[in-house]
Amino acid sequence: MRTSDFDFELPERLIAQTPPAERGASRLLVLHRGTGAVEHRMFRDLAEYLRPGDTLVLNDTRVMPARLLGRKADTGAKAELLLLVRLEGDRWEVLAKPARKIRRGARLLFGAAEGRKAEEAAACGTGVDGTQAGGAEDGGAAAGPVRAEPDGRPLLAAVVEEEREAGLRVVRFEYEGVFQELLDRAGQVPLPPYIRGKLADPERYQTVYARHAGSAAAPTAGLHFTEEFLEELQGRGIRLCRITLHVGLGTFRPVTAERVEDHRMHAEWYSVGEEAARLLNETHARGGRIVAVGTTSVRTLETVARRFPEGAVEPCSGWTDIFIYPGHAFRLVDALLTNFHLPRSTLIMLVSAFAGREAVLAAYREAVRLEYRFFSFGDAMLIL
Figure (cartoon, rainbow, N blue to C red):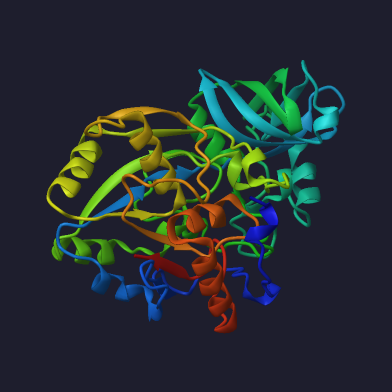
């Protein structure tokens, strides 16, 4: 299977640069797998397609302020890290820039006074692996200047312990205090590379049900929901199942292999708790449908299905590098709510596995013709 089989033409003007004025004020394209029929609705019409006994599976991960701008301790040269995976203790796997100058043994400072120069220099450009920083009201690339303690000490220091391929590094953080609080002060929320604008409100890149910090990107299908709409759905007999998958490097990495089968996913951490496992088992036992909100929920559910192939889902957690493309046999997912994805991406491959490549590409062509908004801040697609 060729990566080019998942290409399509997308005018740049259709890439949503900002979220809609209000959550949920988006369009909804409904694709029926059985017939290939397409309907054009609004997101709030989602309620009409759900039945009592259905379960919405929500990824409750929260995006970290994972982009750190600072300086090398020895030379003062600019350094940038994108936090990806917490390994153990204060050790993290990160993406470093410029990788060729951030080698084993290097000590990096973040939130130090000299870091302000790095932040200002980065304000007009993209970040690690093309990501942007979110949260500026004045059009700058970041929520504010890199901050230091009153005496000039850095908020965070990182020592490079291991060099890995493709700009990946393992670093150990040094700090005084609570790491998450310091990261909240020194870091910035990374935005996808195709978003040139900046967010006046960084919370618009978080779902309303985000709980567990750990992601480098948002599970964007969930951005459409408001707390009120979720309560309305529950009032209609729709159940909410919360799982966690911390979105990592795979979101930013394009598919470069010519053959789809040659692509390898970056592992991401997931967790399915006792309550979630119970809801999943009860839903199918009672004839309800499991509706995955977003591709990250799909990957979690299908990972769990592989883990328990013969029986009921049990509470579990671990790492998954599952790559879903056409030919995958779905076991847990009955319907999918998602956004419109990049050409040639692992996400459009997953959607094509669920609904069929030709049907998906036909629906995408229709969405382009009708000028739907694409990608993270764009419109939604429901596949039944």
